[in-house]
Length: 483
Image (tube, rainbow, N blue to C red; front, top):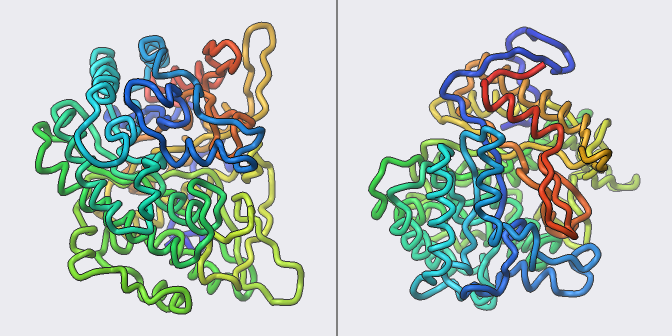
């Protein structure tokens, strides 16, 4: 999947550079925005919240740029009403937020912390009151530290605990949430958290990363089953994957793309949507693990029907098989802190992408989004899709009380044009969520990168909608790409 650009795209209609305007989206297409709990909430030790792996990681010297933490972040916890009004002012049709597991169960086990449930209850009710659909993500990386102390996602018991957590949250909000998303980007949780060590909990273990892959997949299946037991409305069930849009280079490109696709994409879509891990993945990683942690019945549990598959997209990767002699390029878009997020793939080389680039160093290529969506249509023709994250970090400046973020607005226009072209190509695409609503804590890069369509002054915590926010509000208010 996505090993190369599809050849069955319709002829290009519109600008070759994807800078279209006036395109009309279907009336039931959803435009929203997304955030994550640890990145915006703050209040890290208030109202019974327990520590997460990101609290621990960010307070470990040298792990996060400038020693930044999420202790305060955007202080969303205390500014909830203000932020809800902000969402309404931007015409958001849906809001994708994540629930902090340690705010609900401080140690990852046991009874619910009522204060935590109350906070998310106010959030959900506030969204509904403003006509905004609540899209709740159960896990966006803030694992309770107590569970990590027991082995974290390398341990099967964490998946079992996650099912109990899902049941608690589903029982509390199962009459109001529009869409339940179990996981956000399990690729990052597994490979960056337990493989490369760039993300919390900062472990470098090839086998540990693959154990985490499986237990995250298992947790998804268990959570969907648990939610279905307790919800009383008719919600959508989902998972969000950061599927890689992969291009092969040169005579070895196809083989390199196959191996990267197995690790990055099919390690998740295989069990989630087909009920099996791909045989080539098992073969590629046989020197890393025998996969004996996959127990009988696991794949049936994982392979739960979902209503919509969330797709996060930012950039492409280009790969080839390394010749073993020349200096090896490793431009995979992720920080190199010593470990590898690609277990069993030491022979793969990630080539530098052509620009232009965002502040993250990621290439800007809306055709990669179109290719990815069309490839998913081809492989899973009956699976509805949702773009659950897309956006860009740029070095914004405030001029006369405004942020004229021309580059971000251009980035959004081009990628939303790609989304429209995907629909024209027959992709069952249901919506688009811009990342992110507000500038926030960008994980190991701290507060150095700004993704928001709303600027946050980290000294005063004042919110200031950027030009991109006004452009996006016009889009969300009309379902038409503005001029």
